[in-house]
Length: 151
Image 1 (cartoon, rainbow, N blue to C red):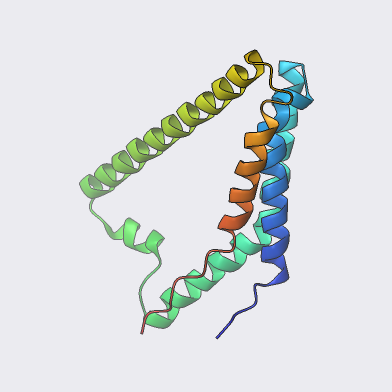
Image 2: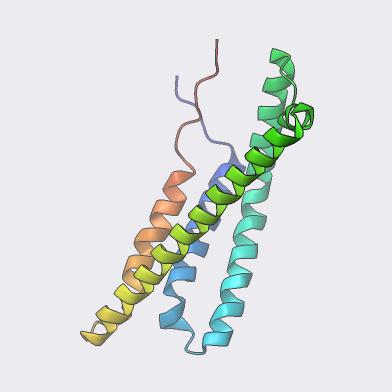
């Protein structure tokens, strides 16, 4: 059976693809570092705003699935844990978040350095080529199939 994606998913995919491509092409488009920062912040906000309806729908579906199974929401499960388990859980979540942020920062620095190296070798619009690939990947991720429902 072929399932059609809802229109909000298509809008989110296109918005994410465009925002990602523009975000990573910024060094070629906006020369001022300060203006680039503000423009990137605006692109991030716009991308989130475009994706929000689809994200809310996914969150509601997940909560409904928990309600049908009779499983309490994660917030209730967390509240019922002993204090020591809460501290360990929060510590692990903080460490995982810090590791993820570090990975993203390293990847973005590498992408920028790669663009700068391409600029030094004389390429025209050195950041834009990879940015288009990143944008296509970001848009394609929205079309990954939903996980199968448990039986």
